[in-house]
Image (cartoon, rainbow, N blue to C red; front, top):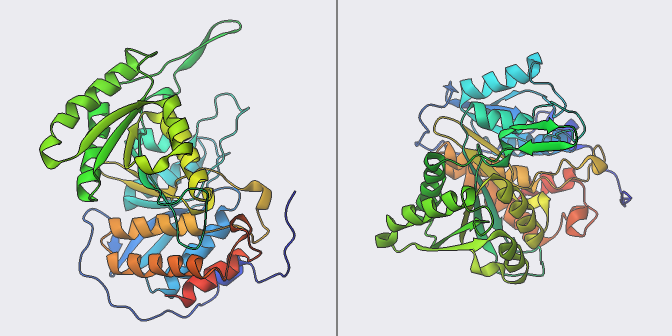
Length: 373
C-alpha cells in the first residue's frame, strides 16, 4: 500500500519545465573525444524510462540546469512496451549512435509478451555495450545493517543467458542456450582488472557456477584466471567464488568484496542483493560501457510503478548515474559539485524520501541538492 505524505509540494516535473536560475561555474578544459558537442555543450540522449522515470529525470534536468552543466538533452520517451520495429525505438537507438552517450531510467520488460524484445538487451547487443558497472557503497546519513560496504559489480552484458536464443523443441520442452566465448570473457575480465587499477582497488573476485556448468562457466573462470596472471605484478589479488556461496557471503560479510566480475545473469541478481545491503534501488548508480558508446542508468533495475506520479521517488540513483556520465565526458568539476551536494543532502537528513524513512518528496530532495551546490 502506498504511504501517505504529510504535505504536498510542486511536482518536480513542473519545476523542471520552469526557468530555474543557473549558478555560475567555470568550464573545465578536458573533453571526451567522439561525443557530440555543439557550441561548447555536449548533446546527450535522455531516456527517462517507465514508472518513476519522468520524475527522476526531471530532478536530474533541474539540478544540472541549476549547476550550469554544459549539457543539451535529446529526450526520447521510449517505453519498455515499445516494440523493436516501432519508430520511437529506432529513433532512440539512432540517437545513442549519434551522441555516443546516454542517460537512461529503467524500462519495464513485459514478462508475458512472447517475442517482445527487451530494449536493454537490444541496445547492449546492437551497440556492443559489453560492460555493466554498478557501484555499491554506503552513503553517510543513511544507516543500514552493514557498514563500510564499498564494492563494484562488473557484469558481461552481451552473452550468457540473455542472448535470447531459446525455443520449444517439443511441446512442453523449452531449450534456452547460454553463450560463453573466450574473447568476450577476456574482454570483460580485462575491463574489471583495469577498473581495479585505475580506481586503486586491490582485489578482483570472479563469480561463477563452474562446479556444475563445467564448460560454460568453466571457460569464464579459467579465462579470468589467465587474465589475472597479467596483473599480478600490479598487486591486484584474484580469487573466485561460486555464485550461491557469493550470495551468502554478500549478506553476511560484504566488506570482503572489492571488484566482482561475472556473467550476465549472475550480475543482474547480485546487483539487486548489493542494492539491498546499502539502502535499496533508489541510491545505486550504474553505467554500461562499450568501445564507442556509454549508457548510464541506475544500477538496480526497478521501475517503481507503485509510486509513479506521487512525487515520492528517490532520484539519487539517476543523479549519481549522471555524475558518472559527467566524469566520462571529462566534466569532473561539475560531477564533483553535484556529487558533494547529494552527499550533503543525505548526510543532513533534511529531505528523506519514503524509501529512506522520511516523508519528503522528490521535489524536496531535488531542491535540497540544489541548495547544497
